[in-house]
Image (cartoon, rainbow, N blue to C red; front, side, top):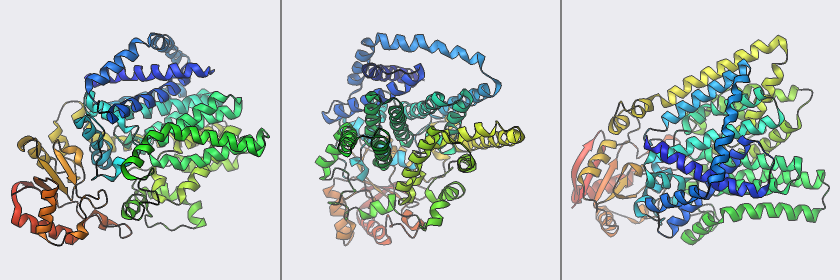
Length: 608
């Protein structure tokens, strides 16, 4: 597993970069707290290093390795700090039985998640664009415009780590970055909780989050939501420490963290209003600052965050004319179908009663929100009990107010509620409630039973989500065997045939298929919701289609007939491909196509 060696070197380089910056802030923090903040900044900087290498066309393995080596050579003090302070782990021997049990659970899940990371990418979004686009950048050694994938103009900072992973080693190294973000987030939840609560509550908060079903589904993939959630939580973490200490360094760190989150995904923008409201409240009502100073400091916070993220929004503007593509008014009409499909309503009624019962719906009917595993019942079971507590800790009040404001912001975009951003805060709140209930002797056993049942349930879901990865991770099956046993119509064998038998100069048209990561050849997607290269409304017959494909220098057509009508699975969402478009392609291939290979409704044609 050479990927682990590479990852260790990259992590120490990133940590060292971040530690050098953290040293400038002169913060009073624990060793683990220094690790999470330093790693957050360092990984963000490393992402930008890869980004700027891509902009200037210097995405080469040797360039990245030289940069990593130079950073490590210049970071002796930071590396020694890490190694010398790591001896604090010995304190585990002094833990109580429950705390020790929680650490064991965390370690088991961490080990399992690490093993699961050594499996091929296969989840829909990762092979469609999350790691598919980095693969293209790595192939061409630069960041290039990709007109057939609308998401290539999104902020992509975390995804740059996947580009680095592919350049240096492979997709397994890329997936280790998301494992790192998930584990760092659990550590951050622990360190935040440890400042205010007992060791047991802190470990419980980290365990609740780290064993969540959706975490099990994402942490060993190249879905970036956990990484974005990490930066969103770190922004709140630093901001709350500023509330308490009024130390400017925490205020700056909070702005940097939210800047790194919006540099990675548009959805992080939804969490800025909650932060600004808390800043305004603290400045105007708690510190009694006048309106001008309150506005000035709040504006500075916002400006610094967008300055951190600005390279991605400038790139988007230069490529599309829209800095928040495709959501700007200049292009929104052209991309309405894409926005509706990815961010639109999912047949959910909006009312006050619906607002009140939304978490019940999220928990009990998670499939409505495209959540394969959901979040588990622990938040629904314990967070509402805060309302029955006689005295609610100030820390919990702030966490819940922040979560509520963010929830309201997301309420008008139901699909967005499936993201993982507020659940670190709710994990802390749940752990606090559980800790309080455990002090009541009469119900202590009932709370413990509920917690153990939840952890067992989450463990079962982990194996349900990841068991298929283990044979490959342990070397008992090939990549082909791994993909072939999936029931997602991935057409891997047809991709494999094309990769091994077609000339390297071939250019595929993916029709009814979007998972371009599986192709080692150049390709163009024809998905109407992801591209503007082919406007099907302007093509009237097979000959027009053929001329368009020749214009695009297409040599082969890859057709997946199993996936072409995805939009029809929900009547409220736009259709990806219409019957007319399939008929156009059939007409084209009858005259100008030669079937080369087919399997289970997936076909590869050569254009002649």
